[in-house]
Length: 172
Image (cartoon, rainbow, N blue to C red; front, top):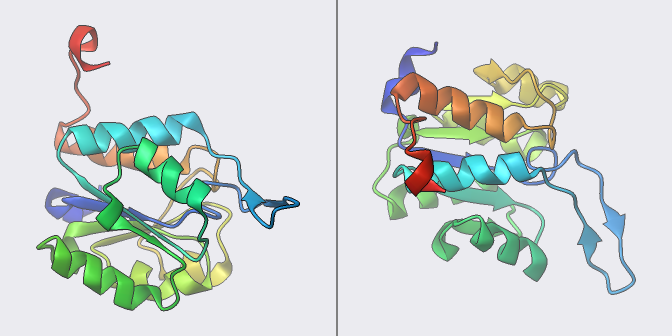
């Protein structure tokens, strides 16, 4: 286990290539259809229930993305869509939530994520991430983007911290 897992209080994620496999289907209205794994979504909800701050930082920017993130329980003020220059967004997220970068686990998969992967306390890249992201990451997930990468990494963190425990009759 990475020694900095003890310090992680927040989780920040990209969408395309992390919560999805990176595939998009253009729709007639100009929106893009993305597929996300429900197990990733549950892990995000569980992390929030257990007190972790969760943020989304994505270049994508649609009402559908915003609504889906809110359904997962992510606070609107921690949903950053249409990001250009993710490091500045990451720094703003940290400042707004009273976090140091070392207290954030970030999962990203491509060139715009590289500065944040390097700045975060724990930078994680999906197994199928771009080479630059893989090289910048502290850890490479055994799972690809959209293939339970988020679930695997959140569960790993929370099990290590003793937070992946539930009263199944009351929690769900």
